[in-house]
Structure formats: structure tokens, C-alpha cells
Length: 122
Image (tube, rainbow, N blue to C red):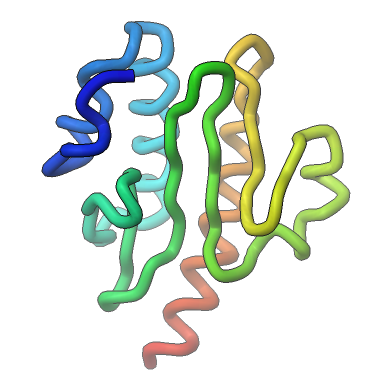
């Protein structure tokens, strides 16, 4: 994928992907913003990042065959059963582009992470 390494913002990151992938990433972005309308959008670690009170809540990134979703530093263990069908490495869930994207699960994990961050930054 072109240009993502130099992306200045999320729109810049998404623009070089094929339309189908752009649509998925925009829907993930919208899902995250529904949960956290006041979140700051930025590029962190080279991928779209959403922050509350200056703290990272969730990230996502596009790859050739999947979308990586990163609720860092936690949020995967709490949803282990629901994430069982998605390959995951340490701190990541991988949603295959040729399978339905679990937007409802992304929303639940984002809500969980937002609550964690808000509790820590009170």
C-alpha cells in the first residue's frame, strides 16, 4: 500500500488503499468515533490512532489481507471468547478483508478501552 508510512493524518493514511478497504477503514473510524466523539485522531506508530485525554485508546492499520486492530495496552484478554475466531498476536486482532468485519465487537472493545483510559485520567 502506498503512502501510509508518511501519512500526516488518518485521511492521508486511508486514501491510497483500494476503495473496498477504504470503505472498511472509514466504517471502523466511524464506529470508534461513535463511541468517542471527542477522541483526538492522529497517526501513532505509523497507523491511525485515537486518543482520550492524551492517552492512546485504540489503533487500526491496513494490510494486504486484513485490518489489524490494536486496543493497547489492554482490551483483548477481556474479549478473548469473542475474538477466538480472529487470529491475534500480542495486542492485536486481525480482521480478514474477505470476511465480515465485526464492527459491533470493535465498538465494544473501544468502549471498554475508553472506560479504562477515562478511569486512569480522572
